[in-house]
Length: 402
Image 1 (cartoon, rainbow, N blue to C red):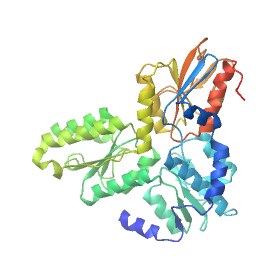
Image 2 (image 1 turned 90 degrees about the vertical axis):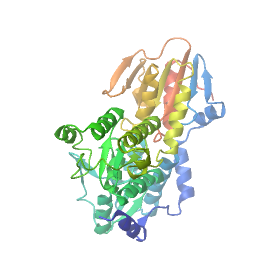
Image 3 (image 1 turned 180 degrees about the vertical axis):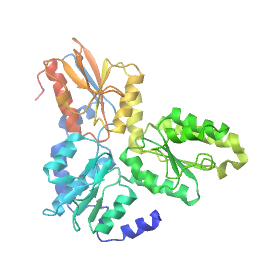
Image 4 (image 1 turned 30 degrees about the vertical axis):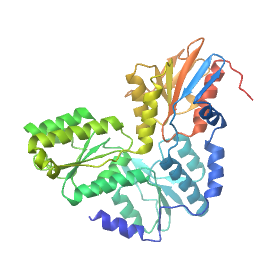
């Protein structure tokens, strides 16, 4: 399928929308009242620090809603205003934040159900309005909705679209796209649908396995078993790893993506020689600015003297999980929570440690003076961060400043 030709055709359709509908002012007021926080703004203005009683809060200098997320949510709100009576669907969570998705449900936006990893579009009728989330949608889903005669509102983040353009460039010159990401993450599913040949690698360990195969060969059956759900149909490691290009899920750790790209560059140089590198390796910068800023701010924050760290964001949010990784690697007691409701009244907190299920920690907030670092993922509204702060102050029996 010629994905470029399809996208051009879709872009020219009057049933396809990538911009708002003229309700920006109303939506801006609504989002400000629902998601913004005067307290968080006050802390930002005070060098990202606030002290109440014996609690000192240090905020990361970049956190929370990024431009792409804010744009996607605003477009979803505008869509509801512009189509007040039509049936509206969304193909996935608009962003990885439970409170924002719940708000859309309250606005009578229907979410496509998923069973055993398969989406059920049977309830979508011709003429229905369908929102594509910030992570994007696969080209097959777009084609189906277009042929069904739906009105499509595409909120895909432009940074994600940039990655799609990159893998299409790989496809045009018959390179295999090495995609740094999680094979079952909706953004990576969408990206791979725009690629030709592709292989998805999760981390440096998997990347090292692949480059070892490139240099020395290996057990083809073992390779295919290892990547059976993370490669294109008909992928052959003995044929399809001679010419590779690098792409990534935009929310992966910047440093790891760069490290992975360098590994493949060195490998192709070693195998084919420096003079032949450009015939075997392509790399474009597809690391999202907002993801990078939040990670850089987190690296700075964990250099501060902190007693503990709270990371606020959806449990299925990749960029939030990577922020948690940074704190954990520094040995700072760190708690990943998706809302203030996880903080109980008896100094208990329900949180998600890295790569584990939810756990409850007792007496997590120390007695006496404490310095707490706070950050939040790119899908987390400031209002949720405020709720978390107020819970901490409440546990410390600090009367709110009015």
